[in-house]
Length: 480
Image 1 (cartoon, rainbow, N blue to C red):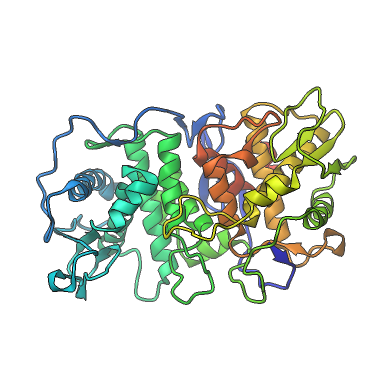
Image 2 (image 1 turned 90 degrees about the vertical axis):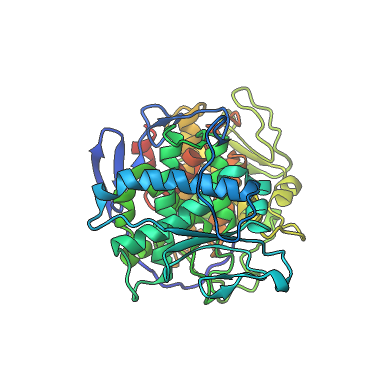
């Protein structure tokens, strides 16, 4: 977070209120789930169980140029088999022309000495920690030495599959002529994320030959892997993949709408979904990090009561989160008690949640930072909002409403035109990334008054995203 400053609005949000099918409403032309059962994930049941290689599945007969036949190449080639099977069936339902899948695959070890370097897409593989689609020869390559092991260690084997599904998405773009030389990279990357999300639904529906994916911790890990490979400095000229919030949005559009939704992604769509949110750290001396203190929380509390006022504002108690409450349960480090209409905060514990570790991994399993803490504080205020509306504060819908309303408030904190009564505290460029990461990791900002939340990080982030791009009415209609 930071202090408010003037920022340029990047687009206008259009909300189509009507339903496009029995369980989908449309926000900005893209489907978002409306759950009859709040424990569903974009219409699929929330499942537990294994995620990863399907036991007993026959190995792919494909080979990779430069491959070593080891574990990571085997996973990659099995993934290519499943991804291609999906697109062979799906391609002609959405696109014209001939399905021309990549014919050549490359594997290399970025750890290998220079004497053992090879070539991929006209570049050396020495220290090339990457996976990519090469348009020049319609091929896909990956680093088995560093990238794939790091992804598996941090996020499990389905993270490797996700990486390749994204790269295959670029191949689909090329053969369907969806993008041209004038299309910015952010559009290409968002579409590829979306296509990967469409394939992941195919796996979650138990249709893939080599892999299985549950829709709770398995899908959570896939989304966390997407979050980790984000543009962590949006002001960088090489920032072309999008923020974590944008990347997860792309995956969710594909998972919910399929390739038909991905085709709609263009620059105008990207800008609409950026919704006037801050896109750089320009003028932000703290680079998006504001220490969590009693003073900053007091300032934020004033903003909350101004941005989403209720008839009786809650009392803000900064002496601890364990409140004497007959109808609530402490949700450290911030709790809401409806009996006394009080929000209690353990400031040191919340500040700890908002810290950034000094030794952040290259592919962090969690994006730490101030808004990972502040959004939890915001979410407990949204329980007070729900209480004022006479809504039930326990159960899945209460937690998802909390996440959704927190998204609404987050977007309002980015509005440079808000009244002076809302104070100067403002959203920073990567705050939504921190919120999304926290929602995937523990979901506290999507929990009810008892601290319970749905097991699907997808559903938690989906609710938050709907609020960021929508209004209070969006949240009310989704979780009525």
